[in-house]
Length: 450
Image (cartoon, rainbow, N blue to C red; front, side, top):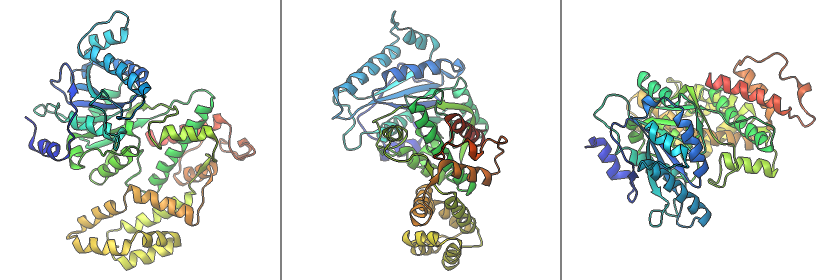
């Protein structure tokens, strides 16, 4: 029987029409949910990396693939998905196949595989909502049915993508960290593969610098939303999943909004002892994100070597300092101080109807603790991003990527190798050679993940 809180959630939020196919679901405490659309070859590569993990964790872990497409997906996608379903079913049904060593190895290792068929005729995702968010939600909701709630230890939901590779200690590090540190939710280290000198490598290094720069900026500003928002890094306990009413159905940015909901209720911690390696490929699967940024870089339609002016994060830092001060709740005082910090900040708060919203919050909050919580809720991750964009458009346009990096790295007192950032190492257009870019990225990775 399921705990009452799980049944209540499922009755209210779960979707009908899909189920888990698996040979053995006893003793599960960890479920890795993996949406997959046209990912046959990548599924095989990912399973190979799972096989390198500690087999002591295989018996309590379900690797759950959600093979999905919409009703209007092309035949090429559906055919690849059929191959994935056939492959996974061979493992589930213990069909040893002479010419497929991977199937045999997975079966012999005892790795528990689950399949949600959201691809075959009559089981497809509805066109209106078809996408990674819906696929993740289906898998995560169904995972709630298979946990053994009677055993001690955390019941953990792990988000992963089919085009990733994981480290050898991936399962052990996550399970041990969640249980020893009593975590509710976390993000795991990530790193895009950056070996080589192809245009795709140039593109992914540029994009990962962009991602990590924004995270560094929020960290400098002491924002509670200073964490990466990448789907394949998200982990949460089942209680946190229920508290936030589950994954959303967004076709893109489902990771951003899910983590934002978690951060409004829990501290999003970091698991720094293992790493997931997302793909650096082009992609059509989502309307924005890594794949589309790679597409845009390779198309050369705009200057990709630009970052938000660090002044935007300096302004955010000053705002959060006064906004989160328990002694500063007065609307008039907050707006007056915001104007003194920066006129763009004041204009943004007025545009966001801060005065009326905050008056309502103060009226409805009975304790200072409630007020402090509402500060995190009102000035959330999305509103933070909107402020940065507003300041960019108001008075602080994007600047050269490496000038911005030098400023934010200095602001965070990050130690730098002597002479690394000499302007003489930049090319005429202000962009350093690829090896220097990689060194920038390595320093950012080390600081954020060390």
